[in-house]
Image 1 (spheres, rainbow, N blue to C red):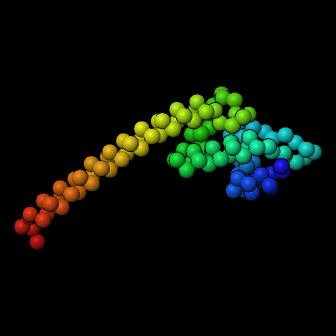
Image 2 (cartoon, helix red, strand yellow):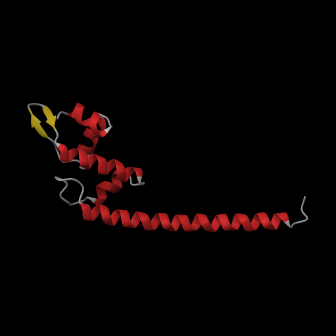
Image 3 (cartoon, rainbow, N blue to C red):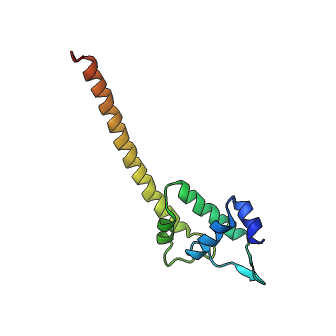
Length: 118
């Protein structure tokens, strides 16, 4: 499929697809004359990139994670699993901090309820 159809199938723009190629997140597409031709593996790779972004990874982080890895058949599974595990740990830490703050807010509210302050 050509870049226009490809970008529609993955829900992004042709500019984004070209950008992914330029920064090394997508392997260079085969050519049919002067047109880029994509197959199904590219769809999966773009879906992986977009999902990683939705989970808080920047394009630069994704690129760094894949540094030196073969991306001809999608982003490497072992790299993604490691990154997801690390992100999960970060989120759990953030959740714990937020829960602590919520507890402190409850305590402060109780303190204020029992206070003689105006």
